[in-house]
Length: 289
Image (cartoon, rainbow, N blue to C red; front, top):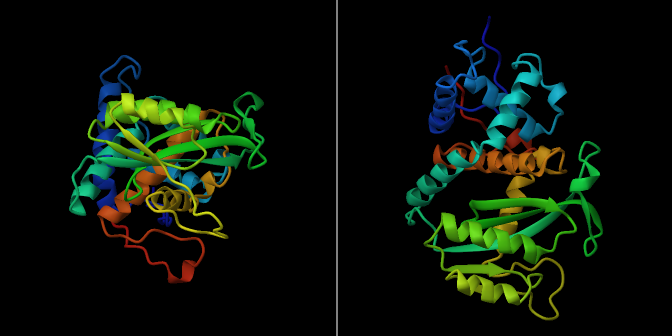
């Protein structure tokens, strides 16, 4: 069968080298179990990953995957397994550490920023996992993320839009304290309750609530917090994330981890990140192999 022509969302050889070990280890572990009954794998992991990245980047439905990818139900089956088993989280942690070290920083962050974003949902999302954000007048889900000061993802939690920011923040603070014990400072906006400061202090983290200057109009970057706002901008370059289309919140979290993994891999290999806004000025490193 002839090699298909690459799509802009495909992994280059350099980026695949960064991600392959995690997926290869997952397959090796699975092959060691009795689940596969000794059958050889039918599809290349790189083709599967390219298909998932295509969905994340373009926003198409799984059933609308181009026919030169593996069958859509096979691709979705891999995505579901990897999402449920936390496979998408693993390369993100490794790439973040490598990228921070490349920029002359310590591999583990000492400070972070937390913010939330409410998004509308598609018709495939069960009503039981949705809610209403009264402040923003949005019916859907809420994405709460934690980033380091350069804006790289540390943790994400997807909930119904009606869940208070403080509730999600409590969960995320516990996760950050457990996974990143070096963190001692966190910035949040005025939407988070004052009692969280005490909760953060118990975890050994100094929480600072930042707010816009009185009388400020229009868009005004807020010190420290602008980093997480920029991260949301990066995520919106992935059309699958413009609206929450995933049936389960954990699958939504996987799509966010996947988007950030792709972004960090590009930065590590010095390849340009695709922008759908001006494709004429976008260059992509050639994909070989």
